[in-house]
Length: 317
Image (cartoon, rainbow, N blue to C red; front, side, top):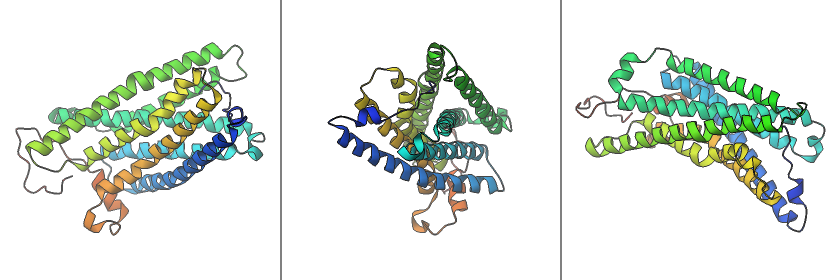
């Protein structure tokens, strides 16, 4: 990630197996570009609707920032794929490098925001009374701003230490990558996985004991966490772990193609999740998007096991 060396597919595309690998590379790039275009459109709609909404819940603020980070990532991914064409690769080398670094920033910010979302919702589920009475009013906005600033600073430092103009920067690049990989693999991913598992257990327990539909916001967070772990995490593992391993060019090509395609799908999935969870089967495609999104992200206080649900609440939110 931080070495400043542009990834080049040419070594893997030469030789006897070059034709088959080239077809795989072109097909994966085309699919990734299609996912980026669709995902950018979906996340743009989410950003617009949440920005124009009259009232934002704490988790709407998180989802607004997450959609903005995913939108930035998808735009950078699409630009990177476009700049890899032979006609543009040499002419816009500096622009290609800048796009790659902004993409790293958007990826790490999106990961940290999703971790904060799942962890905070887990606290709200486990300790509803404490969460409702002790949570600072502007916690979600403050955490989001802090994460944007933190990872902007970290990626700027990574760019400085790993610049190709920095002499003897190989060890510094490796150190920076190890710090970021520790955050991704050792902190964010376990916290996200544990929070997601806790929410899943809570959803199952609520469904079995109370025979109520799980709240839509919990389903949104669970689906987002699962999609990220399955689709977007491989790209981070490639950047921060596999990049430093001596892989054959063919294996490196297949890894990056798979990681790019899956990450593009992962960053494009949240708007689809909001629509599927928030829409009603009988009115699907007939409701305003604002109403569907508001229903998917509506936040309600979690009920303790000793409490009985209100008979007036039957929407399953």
